[in-house]
Image (cartoon, rainbow, N blue to C red; front, top):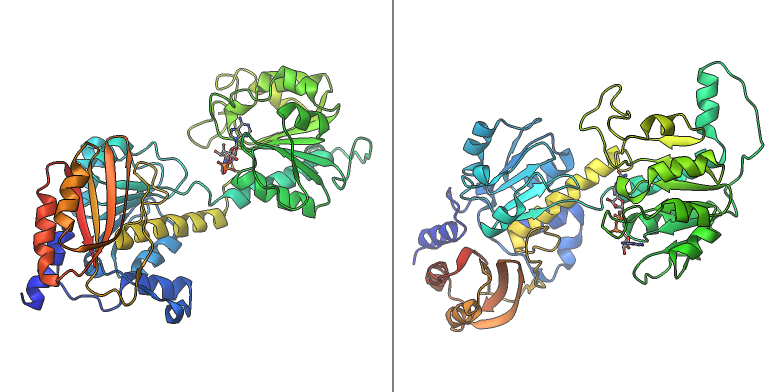
Length: 466
Ligand SMILES: NC(=O)c1ccc[n+]([C@@H]2O[C@H](COP(=O)([O-])OP(=O)(O)OC[C@H]3O[C@@H](n4cnc5c(N)ncnc54)[C@H](O)[C@@H]3O)[C@@H](O)[C@H]2O)c1
């Protein structure tokens, strides 16, 4: 088999057309040199070469952050970038020959659109939500989807720190007063936060960051979580929500929206809190019963509240959108003193946007180059440790198939002519994903290996990396 024939075989295995031999640096090496300067010298694992990276086409819409574009360009991928979303017919045309697409929340990737995406292996949602993508159809078509749920954790934690001080010092009220010409220099019921107790409900990505920041400000931190989580610093986990409520001067919520967390704070919980305590919610709007909060504030039980999220939120920016038509208590809430209301901006910072760019682009690159689906939202999460540098003639097999009995037996029969160094498989719903590193593979055998896997009855997609 000539070098050109072998190259063509790989092109076919990747379902990618274009000139072979276009790239001399392997994708993994170029990624490492950018993000871990000097790391290449110590690297003892083999960089996989999935294909000629110059032939990988990525379509980026909706002004995805520059950090992502740089990562893709450094890989040698062809990047087509648009500041806005595309009309459906244009998107259908564009999606036909790209291998990856990056979107934010406006682009809807429906079944109708995805049906045309014959070469697509991966979708990157450069945001938190993924409901703009038909996740099930994508998975059944062998397309994995990644997002960035945690890149803005620090931004939320910092906002909460600001709100703790702002509530304790009634800064919102003083600022509004002075904007309207009123000079009101008071110290009554204004506090330092040093030595006060912060109760964090939900000690995940945001809650735990906040814990560290709050301790640095001199606060005592306690937290309640449904799972046991190791305490950071001097913080302490408490056994029940009631215990947290009864001990905290500030209660802040950092839990997901689930049926268990709906109205987690309502009238009985406000009653269980210390007199004059403060409430902060930057998690999800369903977690606090806001009508009950309004009553607890009117009675003086709660001294202040900061809300960033609401059960119903306007779909766009604009005046007069936050009103009683949207949420029945809106006018009562906005008329209260020492209440900070923000329009779901907890994670909205420049830093969060750029780290979303890095996080999602890195996930896509790792999936394209190495097959790792860790963090995928619609797909079985599978990864294998790197191949060693001295492992020549090794091939990584990526095989996506319907989750039905007997498939592994068929696949392992095909692989059994080679040494299976390691193998991992997992399933999620109707879709399963197998990764295997096999050694002692003659390059000339790859075409046959690929064709045999392609012909198996329940195959969704096959990729070979070498
Ligand atoms: N305001 C914003 O702009 C913004 C930005 C990012 C995230 N968020 C929201 O913040 C919340 C927390 O995000 P995260 O990244 O820290 O999530 P996470 O998944 O890292 O942590 C959530 C924690 O809550 C715990 N938990 C779940 N149910 C619970 C319950 N009933 N009682 C107590 N603990 C419970 C979990 O065990 C976990 O430790 C989420 O709702 C997220 O959507 C808001």
